[in-house]
Length: 351
Ligand code: PMV
Image (tube, rainbow, N blue to C red; front, side, top):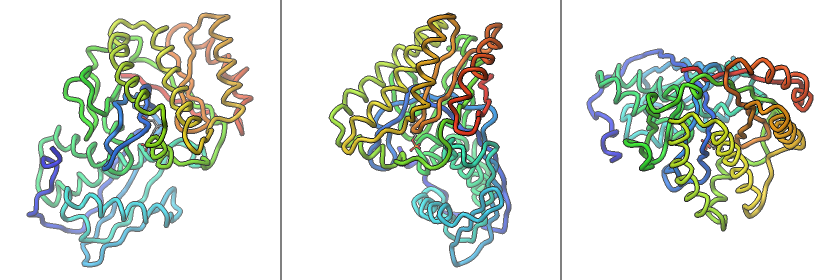
């Protein structure tokens, strides 16, 4: 089925500057473990964030010699350029003109660079959008829905979870019988008419527990699932969780949602601890915050809960309603003290 994405061999290149913006996303059912060519070992679903985004301008000049120069927030990033060069070579079958020029790529994130918030999803999402803009200039217009689908397909080849950032709301990547049309090759939006209104007006405050590079990259982490004795059970469980989540999203059962989302986050980190060699990305502050959230929920019955990325930061999730101010007050008073520099990124999912 990759054939539908093969590029048009007839193209006409010219100097062009294109730009695009793409948000980041946070997974509820996590993708952790993959096969050859970025095929996920299990389906995943994420919320696309409203504010954390990458804005990218891509300048293309036709040239016999292919080269890439990248700038992040105005500073040249040579390592990122090498990564992009390799990525462009990998996706040549799908964009046959791609190695026929020089590129200057300027990107900016709306969230702090050192925050430890993954910029690969929004970054590759924005680059894939830019590339599809160029493709339409060089090879002719495509159908709008297909352009988006191909951008998601291309983003996946850069960074798996990036493919989900091309759509808003809740987005699924990986084949599951629970979501018709879902695919391992690209993401699809979860049908909004099957989502209860409580899940369409949510907050995600990211506590920056640890800023800077993580000790083990997600590429290495995914790789370690190959030898993890619990991997098969985990992949199976992700499928089972999709079955439950579909029902929860429809009925609006928030307490079941909380249990499922926190379980997924802890499973992701449990898989890290069960890898060989083992690794732990949570910090003391991560655990302190988790315990405080659980106590708070027990005492107040308010719906504050968490999810985790492949890192120490805690995503604080809570619905926007008449209780939200009490939750915000608690976060500021009790949880901010566990961050490294008082850092919190306030995002939201409203759709
Ligand atoms: O897209 P990658 O290779 O950076 O992997 C992301 C993995 C998690 O963020 C931990 C989970 C997910 O589904 O986004």
